[in-house]
Image (cartoon, rainbow, N blue to C red):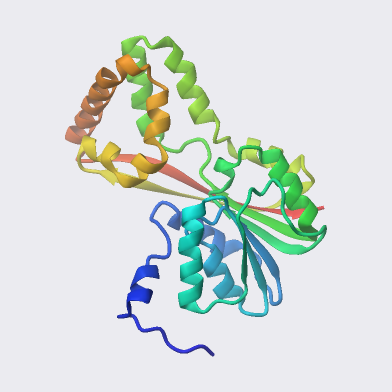
Length: 273
């Protein structure tokens, strides 16, 4: 048994925030459903600043081996600091794309990815690699936000695009929404690589705002979404577009007291066949 951690120490304070709010509901669903057994070999693809990689290592215990794959250099530095402070010895990190996993065939019991699949540039290559390195009957467990994410906001995007007659932006918005995929399309693209769906759990959460500007000033939106949204609108139309969009959100807040955008939360577990 390891020694207690001093909650007042600088090192512990610096690593105390384990997961950002956006990832939390997806990670909770994943951790509640993944198969857990002793002496497992597990991989987390796209672990970011360490979640659920570190949580997996602590739940599976020192008898298991936990691998992490990510290309985010600065985040990996932070993960290594967390590993040091927590005294974890069962994690090995690969700083590279999951399109090429440096492990032998039939080696892993479990692969997890919390919100990772939305960021794979070549999804088929990743899924084929996962299939290769998993043992027979091994599990690929993912969480994701399918089509339906931010529906309320995108409805208003669509209204403003129509009002401004931004014809090209109509298809840009559709492509932006569709890239997440439906539940059915995600299942199909994974099963075609040699997996079979064995479990599926659906949940839903939402983000509530009191002011229209708060939607676009939120750190999550500015980090992960705003740049892509701007690209859908011609540069010379962006100022007017977002002004009209803010007005529509303001009107809804005046009617309902808040503006909420929905986030579907989907967990899927696949077995290698």
